[in-house]
Structure formats: C-alpha cells, structure tokens
Length: 140
Image 1 (cartoon, rainbow, N blue to C red):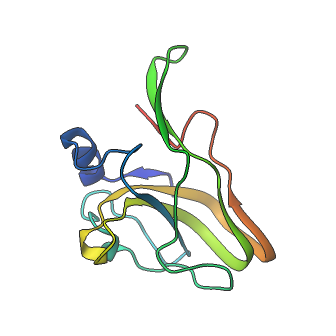
Image 2 (spheres, rainbow, N blue to C red):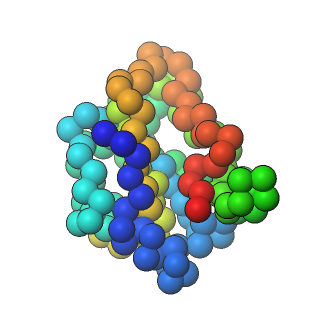
C-alpha cells in the first residue's frame, strides 16, 4: 500500500477547513486490518484497526512544532512537525493517519492523509517514534 492523501483532505486544505500550522493536527496508528479509501474516507470515524497497547492512547497524539514553509530548492510548500513518540510503548503498527481533531466526536475529525510504514513496526516497553521525512510530512 502506498501513502494516501485523502480526496476530502485535499478539499479541506484548499477550502481552509484544515489549517495545518494552527489547527489541532493529530496522528493515530493503525494495524494491518485498515485499508485506506482515498475517495470515501473523510472523517476519523471511517478508520478501523486503530492499534491498542501499553503507552498508546486511542486517537493518537497531537503534532507539535508544526510549520508550513516554502522549499525554494524543490519549488514546493511543505508541512513539518516534531517527530511523534509514544514513550514506554508496546505496540505494533503498519501505518499512521493524520487528521484534524475538533475535540469531540470522531465523525467531525477531518482526515488528511495516511502514511504506510511498509510493514509492521513494533516497540516493546520502549519508544515508538515516527521520524518524519526531511522533505516534509506533506508537500505540494
């Protein structure tokens, strides 16, 4: 499975419904039972297969130190944030879902994108870290 930028996520970014550096952007981990649907998955309530385990809280975690900058070398805008780390975690994940958290029902949280880990990534009573690519979490 490849990374996915949800269709409605693109629309929400362009319409200003999701503002990456100022809104609460979360990352949640999913197992291998989740298959992203770029067209029909619009809200967090569409996601199945969220991981469970020690050190992981349902809904994932908020991204910190978010920024949108211009990459004048590659001629694109990019979204960056600090790496996401779950401490003292015992979990296995196959991917991560980015979404805007509105702080209430999962049916209101807009999906942005899915990052495929390319297989199982695990931690056992240690740090589970998503190290974002230096090119950005997302870029256009």
